[in-house]
Image 1 (cartoon, helix red, strand yellow):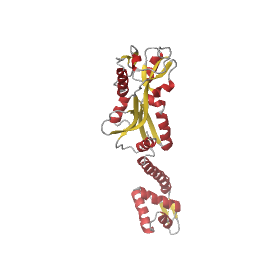
Image 2: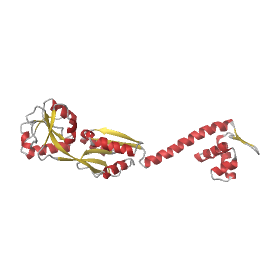
Image 3: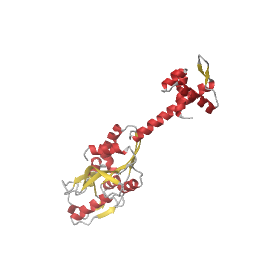
Image 4: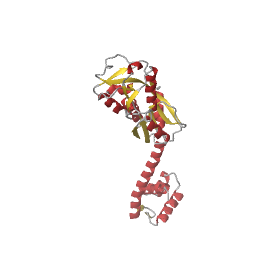
Length: 292
């Protein structure tokens, strides 16, 4: 038995006429009648009562009609869903992102993607850049928003935006009233920065900036998350160099200052170069369409 035989029987049950049912499924009547007879033999049950004038469903036929309709509906849905997944119109997309990307780029990109692919289940994974890189390599993420850095084979990156470092200090700090701060102004200051193991690109930019002014950085605390750094600065435990995208919503008691010659950080969308997930292509198209 296959789905075609079920379809033949449903056509017969709805028309109660072998000729009209055969025409509905684009068959001549003799092979159509043989298909119904073969179905009955396989089931070991009489589905239709026949005479020279009438065709009627038996009790077994009435029950089989209800079940056949349900099976065919599920089969049609399965075929439709498979096509939609293959076209990237449904399915699942696992998107990773750095915490501070949630301040701007993530909500905007997610809003545009959801409008374009409302039936794709979007799984958002907020993590550190180092963890994101590992999840991409292991195939646990389909795409990720992270800092630009050398990528392992099989991954490619598309530019999203350029971020710059800013200095954050407690509001009562001596530097809080300055219009701009240079690397030499950081001499003797206690710095708070995420470890290189968590954010290698950001940590390297911070160290390079301090060293450009001949200032040996004095990093006293190394929390992994940027929001934790902001809270520690608010408590007066030190100052920090953070991406400017974090500075739009600082904690009370924290002041943000521009840096002279502020290092620039490129934020990218990293994806598998030959992703097997069709839901990735629309995301890539959106990023390419915005021109970086």
